[in-house]
Structure formats: C-alpha cells, structure tokens
Length: 333
Image (cartoon, rainbow, N blue to C red):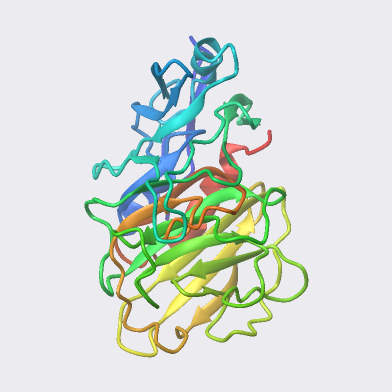
C-alpha cells in the first residue's frame, strides 16, 4: 500500500511532502525518468532547483524548493523579478536523468525558436503557499531532444501532468511527453504525449460535446480512443490531472487515458484498449516537449503545474496513489 504522509518543519513554517509522485511510481516498479514542475518537488527528498527565470538584461536566477520535498520558493522569484519582466528559461528535471527543459528550437511547423513563458503570469496557492505556474500563450514552448532514460521504439511508459481546466484552446498542441528528436513530423507512432484542449476536426479527434478532452498526441493525430469518432467525455475541473499510458506489444497494441479532478476524487478511465491502426508497434524517439507539438506546432495555450514520465507501464495502484498525492498537495488551497 502507498502512503501519503506529510511533516511540518515548525521552526520555519514550511510544509514538505515525505513522499512525492515519483517515489510512488518507483515503489511500483516504474521509476520517473523525467519530473518537471514549477510549483513543488515530485520526490520527497528533492531539494534542488525547480526552474530558472531570466530577466531582460540576461541575468538568471534558479528557483528552489523551500525545503526537501517542498513547494517552490516564489519569494525569491518576486525579489529577482520585481519589474515583472522575467521569463521561465528552464524547467529542471528532478529525476536522476537530468532531462532539463529549455525553450524550444525551431521545427518543421514553426522554424523560429519558441519563447519562454511569462514567469509571473499565473500566481496561485498550493498547500497554502504562493507559487507560479508555467502559463503558455501562443508561441511559447520547451523541449529537450538529447535525453536519457526516456522510452524509445515500442518501450512502455506512463505520462501525467497537472494542468488548468480553464485555460486551453483548439490549436496544436498543448502537449507534455515523448516526441521526435529532429523537431519534425516523422509519421504516425513517432510521438506519445499527453494533450489537453478542445482541438476537434481534421487530424484532431476530439470527443463528445465542446471539450476540453485529454487525448494522446501520437503524431499525425490526437487520439481519444482507437477510432476518429471517439465520443470521449469532456473533463471539466479547475485543476485537471491528465494521464496517458502507452504499453508495449505488437498490433493492435494497448494504451490508456485517465483523468481526474486534481483537487479531489479518483481517476476515471476515459480509454483503455487497442491503438489506432498503424500505431502499433510504436516508433517513439525519446525527446521531451512541453506546450508544443513534436514539429514545434506552437499555437496552443495551456497551463503546466507538474508532470512526470516513467520507465514502464505503471500499475493502477500506483496511478491511484499518485492522484491521492496530487489531491493532498492542495492545489488552489
């Protein structure tokens, strides 16, 4: 059984987690090979930098946790960015793989480099602590092409992110996950990323109603099931936990979508079954993207608080415990 435990450092008034989502995944046999967040540590013992901000004059400042396993030290950002002109220039990987995300270079869809998000655009509280999200507008994006530990080929993985359920659009593509290493569309099955938004029509296979939906960007399509007309239910919460799981194996393959309210409750399974035709076995390349598509399609908007990628297909028990951990963190509280 996974436990959700917290301790209080009373002398400094800082609450820190004794266990993070990546500790839970590791206990379940699927360790995190990427762990990114601007709001909190995703390992109970992590006390390094969460992200880096850059001012207009080019100077930079790392934003650390307040305590091991704790929340972001937003006061340091406030002091450094007094003029409000900072961008987030890097989001550090908390996992041992050190797959740090920097602003994305150009690609096949958009040849120009992407911008970093405004570091002060979205202030919120989590567990009673003020923090800042990565708040994406058109043209913002991050990636790393030369990674270590990330799934390639048909290797299995689980990807989750916590995002805003109110800041999204129907453009391509607010993704977090596995993408091409050459920044181009290399064909079906060369990506596997979790997507959030209400893109529908053409290669965007949105579900029932007006959205938003959690889908998988597997390149050359956003999928909510194994068919174009998925009828996937929308998910409407202020904070959303979005998860994509990609298993290994020959055609027809297997994958799943899970989603939840990040403030309460448990995961709902939106899809669990075979992949679409021509998407098994997968041909993943192992780059990591955030806020963009694999070919640097960068016209989506969205909000990123935290996310992780695992080595292997996580168990349902681990997924449930990770969702409990996210709820216990106290988004918006």
